[in-house]
Image 1 (cartoon, rainbow, N blue to C red):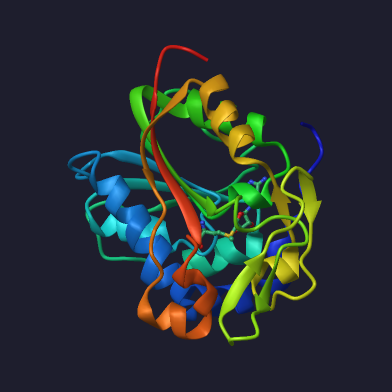
Image 2: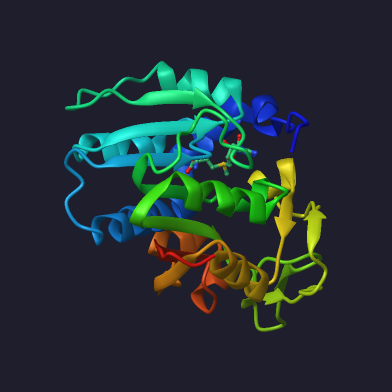
Length: 250
Ligand SMILES: C[S@@+](CC[C@H](N)C(=O)[O-])C[C@H]1O[C@@H](n2cnc3c(N)ncnc32)[C@H](O)[C@@H]1O
């Protein structure tokens, strides 16, 4: 891919920075679960980890505080500059790089013990190219931890609906309509920048094709605070998380 991808988060960088810190879906559910999956891989002290599509670096900083040598990569200059403005006191300083995850031009082959990609694959048009980057930059037996909006819950035209008894349910949409869409009724990230929808099998097959084998899957429960704001998550998983391992295949 030779074209420069659109850095849509530049337009909402300050808003997104605040959202990461105040949205319970992220700070109470997805971020802790992502870090837990990373911690399952073993000691992070001195591990080389890439936070791919790092945004303003919430995951990168958490990993650096656990002793890892972290490289954060993103295409939003504004989010990268917010990341750079918040150094952490840790064993290793974080390296921040402007780069397209679909290419990884600045990332050396077999440079990392692990790659994390938190809630960002939906922002990147070419899933296969991105997973090829992940596999290429991982060392043999390296791990990949990824979180996404659950594709069986969030899909084109799906929307929250009230039943007559007042309970909230998710009206299903067009699950098979893969591609970019922008929900009109969502005040959060997706209502602002849109999302690339793929079916669950597209995600799983793309991971297999890249030589990334799924070892653990998590469909987290919503926190109480998230349920107060989004009661429909009482019966649905807000996200899908996977820990994968690089194999020789793919
Ligand atoms: C929902 S944000 C997630 C950011 C961060 N991982 C977090 O947990 O807060 C999606 C991120 O993907 C980045 N992004 C989108 N397309 C990208 C690409 N092609 N290469 C690298 N980063 C990209 C955006 O700039 C944005 O920072």
